Length: 176
Image (cartoon, rainbow, N blue to C red; front, side, top):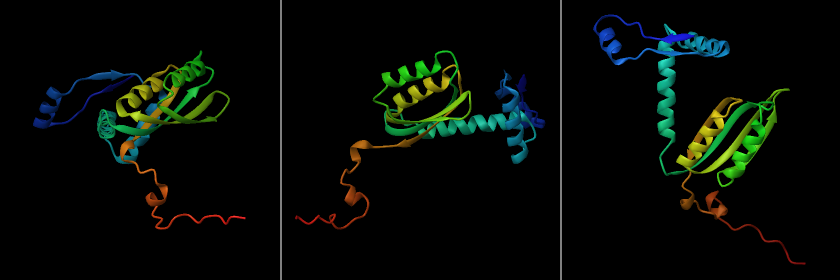
């Protein structure tokens, strides 16, 4: 178990103590090792400061990525235990139920127990986020991450020759 509490001095300490909550979390040894490596690489004095900054960064990135109701494309990447009870079956069913969002999926066998899937999702950002959050939260999914990109589909010009800077039409084949 790890407790998150900041240890500052003076007036700043008093203001921060009043504004902070003590939160106890439980994380596995591998994640603690990663956090400690993150701390060492960036010079953090304690885990609380590092975890607060990581949380702020994640929340900031999330709010930047998500404009409610906006069209987006996203990549959903996750590693899961393929032997977890009914997980592959549940995931397949979830993707079928959201076939309008899921455009394509790459499946990679990492080792005897682990698979990586990368799925391209396309739709309204709120729907994409809800689906991705659901997949990542599934029991047996070990790691998950989603990256969003805005995609105003209605503004997309389907004339690919103009889109890619070609100023002349494609050459025509000779008739025989």
